[in-house]
Length: 455
Image (cartoon, rainbow, N blue to C red; front, top):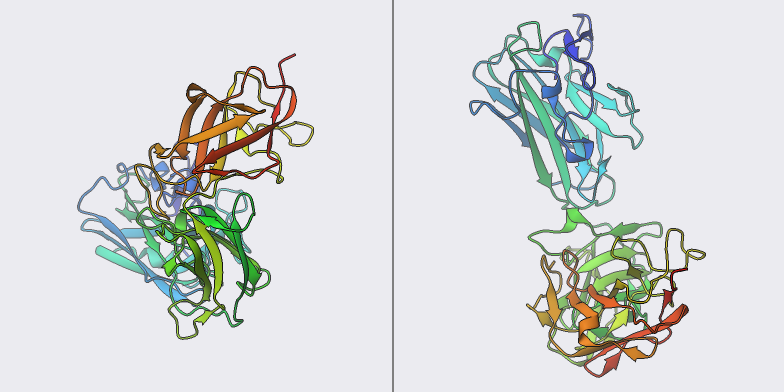
């Protein structure tokens, strides 16, 4: 974001100009991580250019112009900066996958007007190729367009990731400079643009469906809104792994298509959470059906090359309760401070629960809550179980007052339930049996919770 041959060091050095380039057309090199991206600390060019706070002048505007992306296909991103008084211009742009904004998404192309730098831990980085390091595109000396008034536009060639990566966010900062020869009086603007993947899906192998199981107990069957795991072959390329994240959530709902894969259960699309070649993790839809319902895995859904598996069936029930475990036996549970409940000899950082302590257990398939949530939705507040239930620890069924909350886990997918329970005072040391029941159905057998009295 420099406008002259001097810029300020970005952090920790006050008011010391640094000579960056000779007037020979070589690329300006502003400090990296100044686009306003939260993953980079939210920094922008006002650390050096001291005209005013970012976006404080309503006469100016920074705009990113980009279409949705097709994986691996080059496209142009336009960065447009406007201000009636500016006489020199600069920008910095980065692309991040919303699922993990600490990593770059795709690569920029170096040109006479676009400088590409890689984050190597230094203030200004190194030239590309970046090979997976954070990547930034910015102006060159020529493209600062000294003397140009009103507005400028940079054209940045960008190659998206080769595989679909969920939504991608483009972050940019722009410097509408006064060309005074100092960093004073310049105006900084920031903006971002979220784009999504589209275009043809490339999968070519017809999927094979084998079975559908509860996603916590791994026993056959599915329950209303419960986590499920689907096993088979040909769901993705052999090395592919794709997990839904923030970049896949739209309008507060998890996607019903992920990595060119969809699942239909009882004629409804199911939210898809994870895909690999032989496994799909999903959420059972909110169905009124009970008994056997049809299941299909669909590749390239809605495209001309759509492929469907043979029809399978799964027993669908209102209740399919199960606790999540770390290893098929030890319950997935946390202390009030967030530490894992468990034997520290088996799990690093874990500690056993103590009699009288309240811990949180996690499960799925416990039925309808109040208020009611549909599959794919994310409850932002508590939603308690509607139907009667029991929790048993060490053979003792807990009284109502010993279960302080039972319902959906707030800010998680509506398939995840949590139980805040008090460990009975009579619970012995060791692996203590744990179970719960609702609607006449009990959780899987063999689940235990580690308990130990304080020394």
